[in-house]
Image 1 (cartoon, one colour):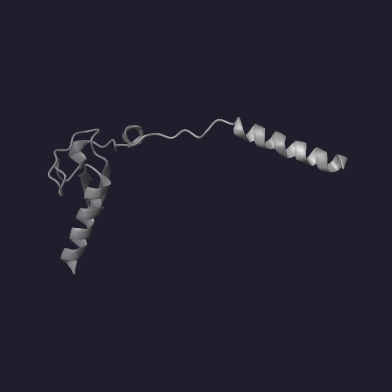
Image 2 (cartoon, rainbow, N blue to C red):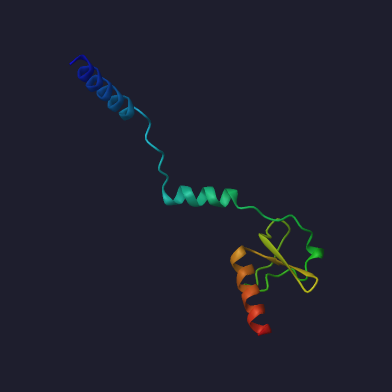
Length: 98
């Protein structure tokens, strides 16, 4: 009987202890986007190393510090404003070769 009482009290204690743990932090969408943009890295490369100072997909002018991704194609380095533009460019180039 003492064992049953002890186990019952132990389970109640564990339940109460679990309820007092801090809840996981939930961020709203705006806070998550801000965090993602803070962690988005840019490639440090001199503009004179690029084949063009313009993203070949979207036409955005590239500045030092604004280059998010690069690709080496035919011995030339192409810069992109984001990885989506790089993927699109590589897909377009591979479809032209076929």
